Image (spheres, rainbow, N blue to C red):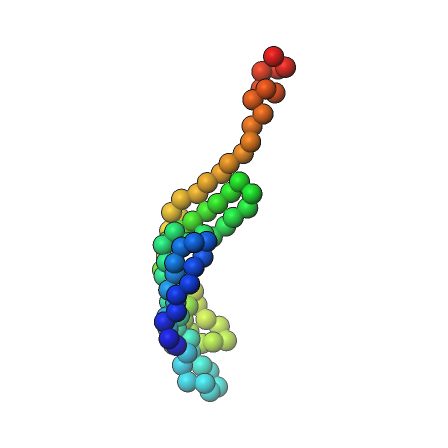
Length: 88
């Protein structure tokens, strides 16, 4: 397979690998690498990570190994400061 690049949440990633001979038991080997990839986003929550993942083995039951290192996260919540003072 030709190496490919893309973006996930504004951060670049690269995928490269191979697909073994198509026959009774084809083999797959794909590697994904990237830095600061957006893994999760919801209102007020954002999680990014660096990834170096390998998917390999028989196509019917591939195995995923590698590293996924949390890079940073953000949690934002609006607080009503007027309600904290007991009505004052």
